[in-house]
Image (cartoon, rainbow, N blue to C red):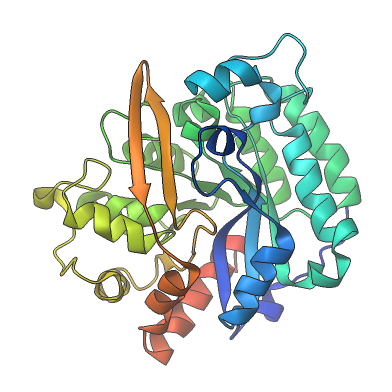
Length: 337
């Protein structure tokens, strides 16, 4: 197992972005969507411009190179290819992320905390076998799962994907989950993610995107000692709430707040759930202009624009004490202390 290059004490008092991506989204590129790529160097200079010291980073959303590219690029449907470019889901995506950090841009590596991505519903044992080889060469700190990105339900973690939970416990790795409350999105339901976390109290979980501001789910997460919540893409999530999009919790189930300003939402979340909230930007997905498959024959079109400056402004709106608490939350999520 490769030696860790970042330790808990390194992060104390630092500004840490807990949710970023590096890589390419081929379908967004082919469909004239945005964003369609992000490089480690580009992310670093974005962070540097906004005085962010470290970032948790993982590949872009989909395990695209394992699947039939023509079907995916045209229809958005993920079907295993007969001759895949990547032997298993995320094999190339994880490998290039780690190589970009430690071999292509080693001068930047001290700023990044890599998580690998996995597909909980396909070729699980083979994925773990590859991850064991990767961890011999590179430091790895956790797992990110985007169920909608690989079109595998998060509940697969309670079935064949349970081997990833055992793998995470073996390594003391946390798991960050993309979640939604949109009932038409069948892969990433927050209620399912919370059930996975409840059944696995020895694993640390983070649920992304403020759980779409769903008050009950945030309260449940706050009560579970092994669960944190990140605020990734809070600016565009706030816009979705303000416009009563189905992607955000409906008004009757939403945290009571002034949704005219995402900074006010950030302050209210930290006030309500001080030991649960973690700051993350979702870079580069603080903008999202794309048509995405979210269920059988159901597509949702996003037209959302934000900036890294918007995301950092949410963090900067907090008091020094609140920012210190968020820093502590993030360290506990990643390292368990």
